[in-house]
Each structure stands twice: as structure tokens, then as C-alpha cells.
Image 1 (cartoon, rainbow, N blue to C red):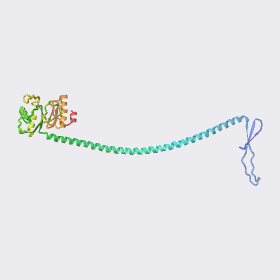
Image 2 (image 1 turned 180 degrees about the vertical axis):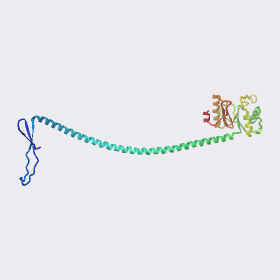
Image 3 (image 1 turned 90 degrees about the vertical axis):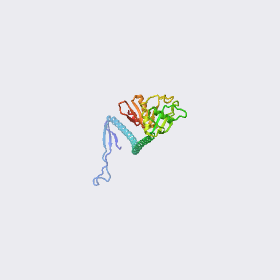
Length: 291
């Protein structure tokens, strides 16, 4: 500043501050501009310490303000960086959201395809089961005239047709030589100490039905007086593999749970829980499980 300091009365300091330049009109002044007289402000010495302290405080405020401005600048730069990072991540999130929507659509499409495949599989399994049952029915039908005879001892050069006739006579069933079409023993792969069962195919269903029908009246009858070395002779239907397995399970349940009876007629499996109950046909394992 161009202010000047002069000492006045004791204990006072006078400061002079220049005034503004004033242009005078040409008729009242010289061509040169004149400065107004300097203004003076007088301070007592006792106030100088306070002014110096205020000056220091103002300087501190200025320094602190400058520091705050610098820190604010750094914070603003960091904010800008964070803003850029946020925008980047927002873009990434939008990309991921788009990808997620695409994936959801793809998953939905795959689920629909899977459901269709499962429906086709279920239908295929149902059709396959139907086909298997139809084949089994057809195979069992071809065995409609067949019976299996268990318990007749084996002999060398045996005449099985004659033995079947002998069995029929013992059960009061007339069987002629020309009633049987095929008669031979079958290999079961079971206990070799037991005689192999005889399978006989009758030309007449009536003859087969008559012989099979009398088995219950002669149940558990010892046939050693008819066939040397024989014990109880069993007459069973010639079942397919599926029906043989099913009947074995039904028979096992009959024994363990003391059902009244279980039997087959023309390959159909039946059971009765007690004497007064109606016969129940068992088609499958599911039917057996529901009893």
C-alpha cells in the first residue's frame, strides 16, 4: 500500500491513505489532475497488538482456506475418479443385466424343451410298457394249453406222455395219447437234486383246464404210490418270465402275511386275503404294493 505512517501526539500513530484522483473541469483548474489530500487514520499503540493478532488470525484463516481449497481439489479429483468408476460399473451392471435376461430366456427355453422331452419320455415309457405287456399277453396266450408238472422222478428212457396219462388217471381225469402235443422236461437251473419239471402241451384247452382244475382237491397229496420215489406232485400253469416273477412275489406275501390263497388262471394272477373276500387280480408290482 502507499499509505504512510507518521507519529503525532504521544501514544498515537497516524496512517495516511491516498485518495482518488479527481479530474477538474478546464475552466476551474489547471490541465493536470490534482490529488485530494491524503486521509489519515490514527490508532492508539494499545490497539496495535490486537491488530497484529487479528492479522495473524486472518493469515491463518487464509492459509487454512488455501489448504481446504487444495484438499477440496484433491477430493474433487477423487470424486471424478469415483464417478468414472461408478459409471463403468453401472455400464457393467447393465451389460450383466442384459446377459442375465438373455440367460433367463435361454433357461426358460431349455426348461420348455426339457419338459417336452420329459413328456415324450413318459409317453415313450408308457408306450413301451404297453408294448411289453402286449407282448407278454401274446406270449402267455401261446402257453394257454401248457401245464408244468413238478415232482415226478426222472428215469432213463422214460415215456413222459404215459406218465401224464398215469397222473390224469390218479386224479380221475381222462387223458388219451393223442390229447398231448408236446411233452418233455425243461431245465430250470435250480436244485439239481430235484427232478426237472415236465412241460406238456395239450391239443385241447378243455383237457388242460380239467387237469389243472383238480389240483386243489388233491393238494399236498403224496404220489409215491403212483410214481416210485415221488412225494407231492404240483401242477402249475406255464407262465411267462414276467408273470412267474410277479406270482412268486404274490406267493411270498401270501406266506408272510397269511393270506387265504393265491393262484393263476390262464396266466392271470389272483389272490384272496380271507375266505369270504372277492378275488383280486394282480397286474403289477404296484398293485401288490397297494394291498
